[in-house]
Picture 1: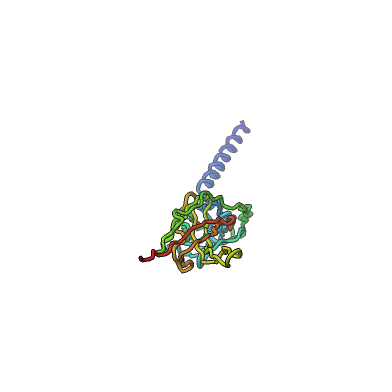
Picture 2 (picture 1 turned 120 degrees about the vertical axis):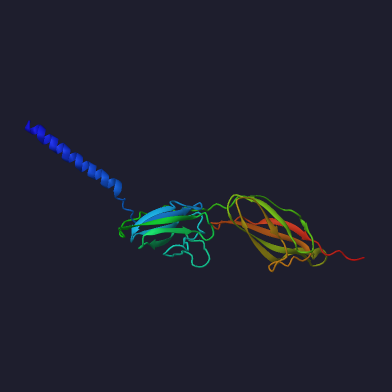
Length: 260
Protein backbone atom coordinates (compact mmCIF):
# COMPACT_ATOMS: atom_id res chain seq x y z
CA UNK A 1 0.00 0.00 0.00
CA UNK A 2 2.81 2.42 0.70
CA UNK A 3 4.28 2.32 -2.79
CA UNK A 4 0.81 2.91 -4.25
CA UNK A 5 0.32 6.12 -2.18
CA UNK A 6 3.81 7.34 -3.17
CA UNK A 7 3.05 6.74 -6.86
CA UNK A 8 -0.16 8.75 -6.54
CA UNK A 9 1.74 11.69 -5.03
CA UNK A 10 4.40 11.52 -7.72
CA UNK A 11 1.76 11.33 -10.39
CA UNK A 12 0.01 14.39 -8.97
CA UNK A 13 3.26 16.38 -8.78
CA UNK A 14 4.16 15.38 -12.32
CA UNK A 15 0.75 16.45 -13.59
CA UNK A 16 1.11 19.86 -11.92
CA UNK A 17 4.60 20.30 -13.39
CA UNK A 18 3.45 19.40 -16.90
CA UNK A 19 0.47 21.73 -16.64
CA UNK A 20 2.71 24.61 -15.56
CA UNK A 21 5.18 23.92 -18.35
CA UNK A 22 2.39 23.82 -20.91
CA UNK A 23 0.95 27.08 -19.55
CA UNK A 24 4.32 28.80 -19.79
CA UNK A 25 4.81 27.58 -23.36
CA UNK A 26 1.45 29.08 -24.31
CA UNK A 27 1.95 32.46 -22.63
CA UNK A 28 5.70 33.14 -23.01
CA UNK A 29 6.71 34.43 -26.45
CA UNK A 30 9.54 32.67 -28.24
CA UNK A 31 12.79 34.58 -28.35
CA UNK A 32 12.93 36.46 -31.66
CA UNK A 33 16.74 36.80 -32.05
CA UNK A 34 18.61 38.74 -34.71
CA UNK A 35 17.35 37.94 -38.18
CA UNK A 36 18.12 38.52 -41.84
CA UNK A 37 16.05 38.58 -45.03
CA UNK A 38 17.01 38.65 -48.69
CA UNK A 39 15.57 40.21 -51.84
CA UNK A 40 15.11 38.17 -55.02
CA UNK A 41 12.62 38.43 -57.87
CA UNK A 42 10.95 41.54 -56.40
CA UNK A 43 10.04 40.04 -53.03
CA UNK A 44 11.63 39.66 -49.61
CA UNK A 45 12.16 36.17 -48.25
CA UNK A 46 10.11 37.30 -45.22
CA UNK A 47 8.18 40.56 -45.08
CA UNK A 48 6.68 40.09 -41.58
CA UNK A 49 9.66 40.17 -39.23
CA UNK A 50 9.69 39.83 -35.43
CA UNK A 51 12.55 40.83 -33.11
CA UNK A 52 12.98 41.72 -29.43
CA UNK A 53 14.44 44.92 -27.99
CA UNK A 54 18.05 45.54 -28.96
CA UNK A 55 18.06 43.03 -31.80
CA UNK A 56 18.95 43.65 -35.43
CA UNK A 57 17.39 43.01 -38.83
CA UNK A 58 19.77 42.64 -41.78
CA UNK A 59 18.58 42.95 -45.38
CA UNK A 60 20.64 41.18 -48.09
CA UNK A 61 20.68 41.96 -51.81
CA UNK A 62 21.38 38.54 -53.33
CA UNK A 63 19.99 39.19 -56.82
CA UNK A 64 19.23 38.88 -59.56
CA UNK A 65 17.35 42.18 -59.08
CA UNK A 66 19.18 44.60 -56.80
CA UNK A 67 17.63 48.00 -57.52
CA UNK A 68 15.57 48.22 -54.33
CA UNK A 69 15.74 50.39 -51.23
CA UNK A 70 14.85 49.58 -47.63
CA UNK A 71 13.17 52.79 -46.47
CA UNK A 72 11.30 53.28 -43.19
CA UNK A 73 7.95 54.93 -43.75
CA UNK A 74 7.31 58.37 -42.19
CA UNK A 75 4.81 57.21 -39.57
CA UNK A 76 7.52 55.24 -37.73
CA UNK A 77 9.17 56.53 -34.56
CA UNK A 78 12.54 55.38 -35.91
CA UNK A 79 13.63 56.22 -39.44
CA UNK A 80 16.14 54.50 -41.72
CA UNK A 81 17.00 54.50 -45.41
CA UNK A 82 19.41 52.23 -47.28
CA UNK A 83 19.44 54.67 -50.24
CA UNK A 84 19.37 58.27 -48.90
CA UNK A 85 19.41 59.75 -52.42
CA UNK A 86 18.20 57.98 -55.53
CA UNK A 87 17.78 54.22 -55.46
CA UNK A 88 20.93 52.58 -56.84
CA UNK A 89 21.68 49.06 -58.03
CA UNK A 90 23.24 47.39 -54.99
CA UNK A 91 26.21 45.09 -55.62
CA UNK A 92 25.40 41.42 -55.11
CA UNK A 93 25.94 40.51 -51.45
CA UNK A 94 25.39 44.07 -50.20
CA UNK A 95 23.74 44.37 -46.75
CA UNK A 96 21.89 46.95 -44.68
CA UNK A 97 21.12 46.57 -40.97
CA UNK A 98 18.90 48.33 -38.41
CA UNK A 99 18.98 47.72 -34.65
CA UNK A 100 15.64 48.27 -32.91
CA UNK A 101 15.66 49.66 -29.34
CA UNK A 102 12.01 50.72 -29.10
CA UNK A 103 8.94 48.44 -29.20
CA UNK A 104 6.41 48.95 -31.97
CA UNK A 105 5.46 48.06 -35.53
CA UNK A 106 7.74 49.51 -38.19
CA UNK A 107 6.93 49.55 -41.90
CA UNK A 108 9.47 49.63 -44.72
CA UNK A 109 9.13 49.95 -48.50
CA UNK A 110 11.21 50.27 -51.66
CA UNK A 111 11.09 53.82 -52.99
CA UNK A 112 10.83 52.54 -56.58
CA UNK A 113 8.55 49.53 -56.11
CA UNK A 114 5.68 49.95 -53.64
CA UNK A 115 4.91 46.22 -53.71
CA UNK A 116 8.37 45.45 -52.26
CA UNK A 117 7.58 46.18 -48.62
CA UNK A 118 7.23 44.67 -45.16
CA UNK A 119 6.95 45.24 -41.42
CA UNK A 120 9.16 44.72 -38.39
CA UNK A 121 7.36 43.97 -35.11
CA UNK A 122 9.51 44.77 -32.06
CA UNK A 123 8.37 43.32 -28.72
CA UNK A 124 8.95 44.95 -25.31
CA UNK A 125 11.02 41.94 -24.21
CA UNK A 126 14.80 42.47 -23.91
CA UNK A 127 16.41 40.47 -26.69
CA UNK A 128 19.78 38.91 -27.40
CA UNK A 129 21.86 41.36 -29.50
CA UNK A 130 24.65 38.77 -29.75
CA UNK A 131 22.48 36.06 -31.35
CA UNK A 132 23.53 34.66 -34.71
CA UNK A 133 21.20 35.69 -37.59
CA UNK A 134 22.56 32.91 -39.76
CA UNK A 135 24.59 33.00 -42.98
CA UNK A 136 23.79 35.09 -46.02
CA UNK A 137 21.92 33.05 -48.67
CA UNK A 138 23.70 32.09 -51.89
CA UNK A 139 23.93 34.87 -54.46
CA UNK A 140 21.76 34.66 -57.56
CA UNK A 141 24.04 35.51 -60.46
CA UNK A 142 22.42 36.41 -63.77
CA UNK A 143 24.74 36.21 -66.76
CA UNK A 144 22.06 35.70 -69.43
CA UNK A 145 21.22 38.49 -71.84
CA UNK A 146 17.53 39.38 -72.30
CA UNK A 147 15.59 37.56 -74.99
CA UNK A 148 14.28 40.20 -77.42
CA UNK A 149 11.88 39.40 -80.24
CA UNK A 150 10.14 41.13 -83.16
CA UNK A 151 11.95 44.47 -83.11
CA UNK A 152 10.45 46.90 -85.64
CA UNK A 153 9.36 50.51 -86.08
CA UNK A 154 5.75 51.40 -86.73
CA UNK A 155 6.77 53.67 -89.62
CA UNK A 156 10.07 53.42 -91.43
CA UNK A 157 9.50 56.81 -93.06
CA UNK A 158 8.92 59.57 -90.51
CA UNK A 159 7.52 63.06 -91.07
CA UNK A 160 9.65 66.19 -90.77
CA UNK A 161 7.90 67.61 -87.67
CA UNK A 162 10.03 65.59 -85.25
CA UNK A 163 7.24 63.47 -83.78
CA UNK A 164 9.16 60.25 -84.39
CA UNK A 165 7.52 56.86 -84.56
CA UNK A 166 6.95 53.80 -82.37
CA UNK A 167 9.54 51.13 -81.58
CA UNK A 168 7.91 47.76 -80.97
CA UNK A 169 9.53 44.73 -79.34
CA UNK A 170 8.95 41.85 -76.94
CA UNK A 171 11.32 41.11 -74.06
CA UNK A 172 11.45 38.61 -71.19
CA UNK A 173 13.09 40.83 -68.54
CA UNK A 174 12.68 44.26 -67.00
CA UNK A 175 15.43 46.73 -67.75
CA UNK A 176 16.36 49.60 -70.00
CA UNK A 177 16.87 50.21 -73.68
CA UNK A 178 19.01 52.65 -75.62
CA UNK A 179 19.65 53.60 -79.22
CA UNK A 180 22.51 55.42 -80.90
CA UNK A 181 21.41 57.26 -84.04
CA UNK A 182 23.68 57.53 -87.08
CA UNK A 183 22.88 59.59 -90.15
CA UNK A 184 23.90 57.93 -93.42
CA UNK A 185 25.99 60.46 -95.34
CA UNK A 186 27.48 60.07 -98.81
CA UNK A 187 31.09 61.12 -99.23
CA UNK A 188 33.53 61.21 -102.13
CA UNK A 189 32.95 61.23 -105.88
CA UNK A 190 32.88 58.69 -108.64
CA UNK A 191 34.30 55.32 -107.74
CA UNK A 192 35.41 56.67 -104.37
CA UNK A 193 31.89 57.62 -103.41
CA UNK A 194 30.72 55.79 -100.28
CA UNK A 195 28.13 55.99 -97.52
CA UNK A 196 29.40 56.57 -94.00
CA UNK A 197 27.74 56.79 -90.61
CA UNK A 198 27.75 60.10 -88.76
CA UNK A 199 26.73 60.02 -85.10
CA UNK A 200 23.56 62.08 -84.68
CA UNK A 201 22.35 61.46 -81.11
CA UNK A 202 20.90 58.91 -78.75
CA UNK A 203 17.78 57.87 -76.81
CA UNK A 204 17.05 55.89 -73.60
CA UNK A 205 13.86 54.19 -72.35
CA UNK A 206 12.56 51.62 -69.83
CA UNK A 207 11.47 48.06 -70.67
CA UNK A 208 8.83 45.92 -69.00
CA UNK A 209 8.29 42.18 -69.42
CA UNK A 210 6.16 41.37 -72.47
CA UNK A 211 5.29 43.49 -75.48
CA UNK A 212 6.60 47.06 -75.46
CA UNK A 213 6.01 50.09 -77.61
CA UNK A 214 8.11 53.17 -76.92
CA UNK A 215 8.36 56.53 -78.63
CA UNK A 216 11.30 56.41 -81.00
CA UNK A 217 13.46 58.87 -82.98
CA UNK A 218 11.49 61.95 -81.95
CA UNK A 219 13.21 65.34 -81.80
CA UNK A 220 14.82 65.88 -78.39
CA UNK A 221 17.79 67.60 -76.86
CA UNK A 222 19.78 64.43 -77.58
CA UNK A 223 18.59 63.89 -81.18
CA UNK A 224 17.88 66.75 -83.59
CA UNK A 225 15.99 64.51 -86.08
CA UNK A 226 16.94 66.30 -89.30
CA UNK A 227 15.80 64.98 -92.71
CA UNK A 228 17.83 62.10 -94.09
CA UNK A 229 18.43 58.36 -93.92
CA UNK A 230 19.42 56.83 -90.58
CA UNK A 231 20.42 53.61 -88.92
CA UNK A 232 19.92 53.13 -85.18
CA UNK A 233 21.86 50.64 -83.08
CA UNK A 234 19.51 49.57 -80.30
CA UNK A 235 20.60 47.76 -77.12
CA UNK A 236 18.44 46.07 -74.47
CA UNK A 237 19.84 45.69 -70.94
CA UNK A 238 18.38 43.79 -67.97
CA UNK A 239 18.60 44.77 -64.29
CA UNK A 240 21.81 42.74 -63.88
CA UNK A 241 23.40 44.86 -66.64
CA UNK A 242 23.48 42.08 -69.24
CA UNK A 243 23.09 43.71 -72.65
CA UNK A 244 22.08 42.33 -76.04
CA UNK A 245 24.15 42.77 -79.21
CA UNK A 246 23.17 45.81 -81.26
CA UNK A 247 19.91 45.58 -83.19
CA UNK A 248 20.03 47.56 -86.47
CA UNK A 249 16.96 49.66 -87.20
CA UNK A 250 16.77 51.63 -90.44
CA UNK A 251 14.47 54.62 -90.95
CA UNK A 252 14.15 57.82 -92.91
CA UNK A 253 13.07 61.32 -91.90
CA UNK A 254 11.38 63.23 -94.74
CA UNK A 255 12.11 66.85 -95.54
CA UNK A 256 9.51 69.57 -95.95
CA UNK A 257 7.54 69.54 -99.19
CA UNK A 258 8.86 72.15 -101.61
CA UNK A 259 6.40 74.79 -102.70
CA UNK A 260 5.73 74.89 -106.43
